[in-house]
Length: 247
Image (cartoon, rainbow, N blue to C red):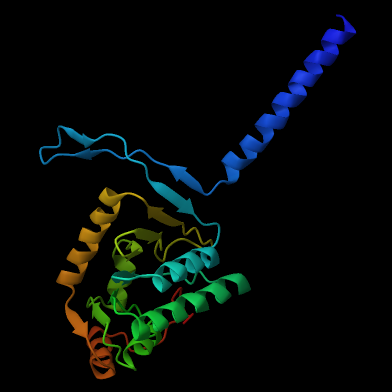
């Protein structure tokens, strides 16, 4: 084969690889993607909206996830809905995670004392460790903070299926935190997502949260009521299992 042709072929292959390799790398590492969503009418037959774009952002660690949640809460102007229930693992495992978890907690404090919007939070208590977060929210009695809980005993937490935790901010941001229960062995396999730009999906989860809120047994307004709930469900001991230890 003529050497000129060989050189040309090598040049062409080199150019192709130069274009394809960054694409493969970006495809592997990119954090945002578009997803097609189909919604159906009441009979489940006709498609109302065949193609809707959804912005999905994934997080490689819980610190980045908490950082994004904190920023969304800081900028909220109507309401925040927060599920803090179910049996959970301690997912804050590094100084990076710890730093942004503290930022997340501070964003809740600031929101509840400075914002005109309302923070709704649903708790369950597998042990007394989670009491500290509830206590922090109740002790200064912020007017725009509301708390409810489910009367799930510590034993029931272990037996029930894992409960999906999520946040909804201003009906614009949906943050999914997948706490997958107590029988996973030693490896943490939680996954975290942020979904935006799709009203159908966010409204679906908002209705789900509203139903959870409406059916919760107790609205807790002060520390005395909190202690009574903990006593009534038997969550009177701290726990050395996989539980929430970071405030």
